[in-house]
Length: 210
Ligand SMILES: [Fe+2]
Ligand SMILES: [Fe+2]
Image 1 (spheres, helix red, strand yellow):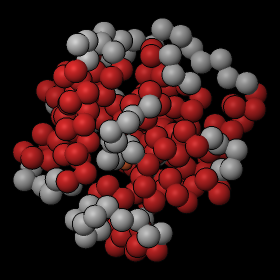
Image 2 (cartoon, rainbow, N blue to C red; image 1 turned 45 degrees about the vertical axis):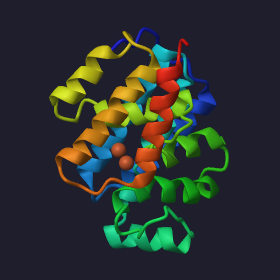
Image 3 (cartoon, rainbow, N blue to C red; image 1 turned 180 degrees about the horizontal axis):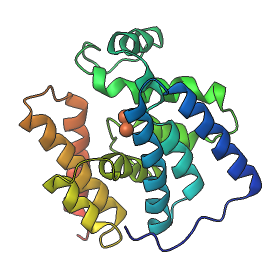
Image 4 (cartoon, protein in one colour; image 1 turned 180 degrees about the vertical axis):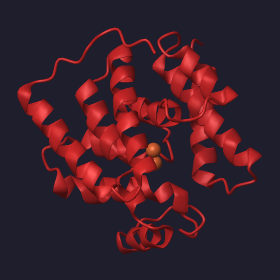
């Protein structure tokens, strides 16, 4: 990965990262694979951020916290989403795999009030993506898909190879489309919101340079 620079964190930022990392280690202690993935996404997001001029600190903390609600069971995350009034226009059981990011983004700000809204937005859209993705959103989305613990499938390998070689928008797009292909290949449920996001971004990309 093209991580040219090293992050230059303040003592306060280092202290916050250490505190959040300790919290995540405790919170996901029963799920060591998920914990390893979260720590790996944090490192990968930090490197991507440095390669693409995004704030590495925000990328790092977003990576640490993005799968916080994977500690919940499938039933629990649906229940939590219902309680929060989260509405994706379909039965929440159909979109259960998408809910943990949205739920975490609603619940974690009160636990970490000093972190800015950009972090919660990135966590909220790390499963669904969105028509408007900020660079931080894209960094977290891509890092989640290519962190080194994930197997080197042809699709992931292709994205990994392009880090630093193509724009962040292009890297995100390949990662996002790869995720849709994965859903289709597995005959899984594809949330209509994902199709809407796909169409909006595809249209925008087709008009680029006109
Ligand atoms: Fe996730
Ligand atoms: Fe993840």
